[in-house]
Image (cartoon, rainbow, N blue to C red):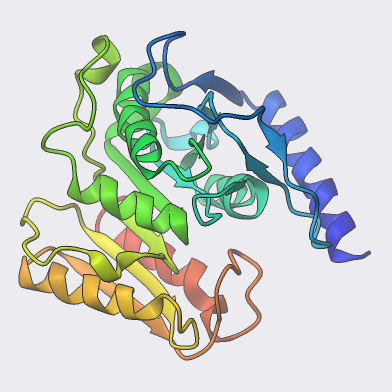
Length: 277
């Protein structure tokens, strides 16, 4: 079966199975209370590129979709998943629902964030900060451990996850309701081929959560930023690991056939080491 057809079937399957297993999708913001701006145009899917994956743009109404893990050992750890897309769109399945399915299979609940795009980094950070606090507010209802809530991001989503890991002492928006009372600091962060980290500041604080960075040398456009971020975390004495593979490129998610194909197991091993699982 061709990869594009398989991807579309997997995309549909994940939502069907998720609905049967308690998947829910909620708005990140109360009606009329979202800070900042939305998109000018109607939300839409960008025409396919022949790979079968779904790219959503013009997001004005951010959503958080819960994919609960089997409740064998509730409450479960959880991760908010931030797909990539260059802040122009979100690749909602390849770096979203597929990642949720992988996390679920390993006993971790997942919450896929559809954040504001295009060209709205400020809005995207507000969406993720709100999503972290909102998840903690509903942790008991969702069977999630609010003290084992992390973020995982890919490409631009990795940049977004890093920003949320750095900027948590004060929100980038004024609190709206009780859902903004819990901390918006993630308990840990996994950054997979993160983009745009070249401009990260060096004076990071020691309270940044434990961080795993995954990258490959042949991702020439973005690997330098990961190296710099790793050094900045070291300087701040933040617990972190940097898994640097020789080959892998960019944008592979769970589909890598090169050296970086080992990253999912490496990430699970790291999560076990820091006590998440």
